[in-house]
Image 1 (tube, rainbow, N blue to C red):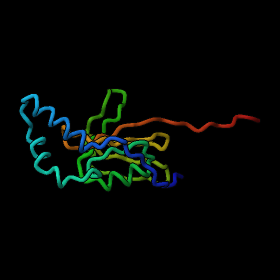
Image 2 (image 1 turned 30 degrees about the vertical axis):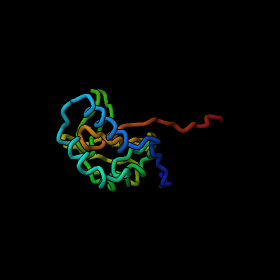
Image 3 (image 1 turned 30 degrees about the horizontal axis):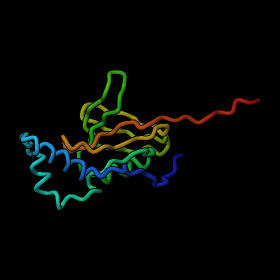
Image 4 (image 1 turned 180 degrees about the vertical axis):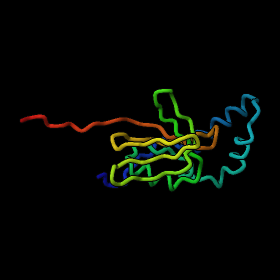
Length: 145
């Protein structure tokens, strides 16, 4: 069974400042701002950096707790045989007996296993989070007799 260790890594860049710089570059190039970019500038002072952060190298349980903590739409961008799933996550359940998370999507469901590390990236363009697999790992099995 998996244990919750409470470790997640924050990216070193400040997403709030990065987005602000991209918008200011757009303004200096005399390009038109979208409604979302205008809202971002209007609410810049109230936006906390932790509200729009990325989460990297998440274990299964860390992912479960963070998904419940985030108050934004999360899109499952994990790749399967047909490519990116690209579907919105509606509900998240944790099966403690099998150490899996079951993601209920708009058009189906997917099971996440404990042998992956996951990442949640904030997408400014769509004002949502994207869920993807960061890396995969396996335990070595001793085959000595």
